[in-house]
Amino acid sequence: MLTAYWGFGKMRNFLLKQVRLSHTDLLERSLEEGRGVILSTAHFGAVEFLPAALSFRGYPVTMVVNFQTPRLKKTLEGLARQANLELLDAQDGGVIAKACRCLREGRIFITELDEMKLWKPTACKMMNFFGQRVPLDRGVELLHRRTGAPILLGLMERLGGLRYQLVFEQPQEHLAAPTRLGPDAQLLKRLEHYIYDAPDHWYIWNELHHLEQFQTA
Image (tube, rainbow, N blue to C red; front, side):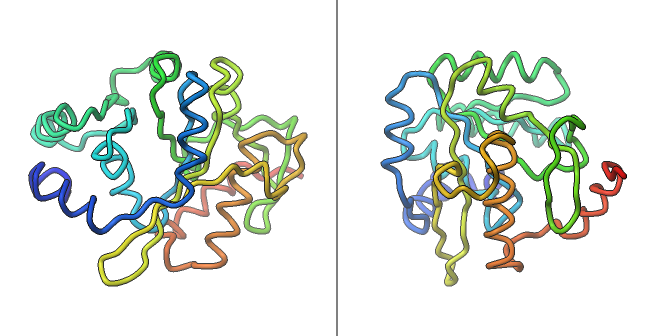
């Protein structure tokens, strides 16, 4: 909402001043491969600032958006054009094909890995997440296989005093989950680590009940 109604100039100045980027070398090296970057994030910290914080620094960003109203869609699309931020309307369909296209163009595609109500898991791979054994959603792995784009975890931490830090990680380096489970499991286990370390930063605790639909014997 702030991004939409503060206006381009005010929002740009705020994010350039108040947000610092950590481990940007990982992002730069990944982009240099020329296959785009799958940037997986979550409802953690100040995630709403993440896309604009990158695009205002010249990074080509694409993300999927569920617009609440036609007016908000028009406003956000106007701001996005000024910032080289591409918004894909989830209601238009064909998201996977559009995501692959933007990755092949060398863009950063942002996806939220904790959208549990939207998971389409497969029972052939299981993992432990917040003490529950669930089948694994493989959305990021699907994009990676189709495009070869490198995968990063990006989380916007709140530092206090209206200051924020966008941290990038290569989740496979931490061995948070067995490599045989693939990138989606590794990303979730790293997210779980961050949430346990700063539980107040994750603001969808009430949606953990969505995991119940995936419970298996």
